[in-house]
Image (tube, rainbow, N blue to C red; front, top):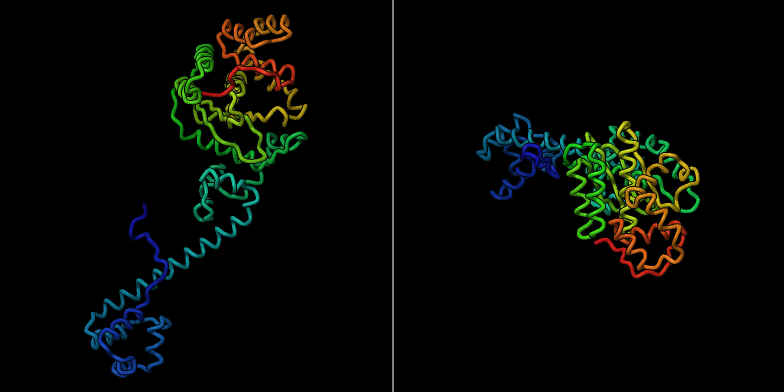
Length: 368
């Protein structure tokens, strides 16, 4: 909160305005007053309209005629001068902010940030926030962010339109929100224990989002749920935030199987790729938006395998998938129960393997 001395008035009050109030209150005409202090009426009118300042000589004349201390009039003039200077400086700052905003607004997802109530449309308010979220000291640095390899590669998608500006806005907001999270110390040796805890939560599927976030925090991993902007079909991201690994998830699909695979995929990046590289970040788009080169990336394959085999063991899955042809709900439920995983994870994996998401099933996919 600003101190009273730091507040800047909308307008500055000139001593002439106060003088006019005094003359009117005392029923003294401007002509009579001008004659008493030895000024032309036009000169007095300039003072009243704020076009001429009150100096020490005039302040003494006002004191004699109105019986108001000369220091009072000089103080009014001093405050007027200071307020005028502050207002001019404030207006200049606003003009500079408006000019800056006009130059960079096309490099920002303005509608997304407004929807998320991050900015309000006032450049003076918004520019410092944008700088903080994007981690730049000068707005001109924004252009260089879009030249980074991660954002360049997503422009090559041919199936889904990816807007790099909106994608970067989502990434930076996730990273900004992660900074403010407090979690326990991370210990990579607790990986297997963590995976089992998460599988139990997913299998039970009760208050899943809240419990997963709380459990990850206990194991030293930050988790941010952040809605995505338009033309940014992003599922998740993993990165290092201060002294802890962090995950961002968009929850584009309200499906438990999609949530579980995205979560474990990002955990794969953490345990397989981020431990020795705290500067890396791994952004994962909708499968349909991924280029063939991206799908063949060894790093992405490793993260996919990590997710698959930690949700359902490789050998158990192979035996089940090869011997079945119908994959009816009863078979899926029995297999899921034996492997201590929610049946929708099994059904979702079958749909993915067959590239068929129209298979009829009574299994519930909703996240509870």
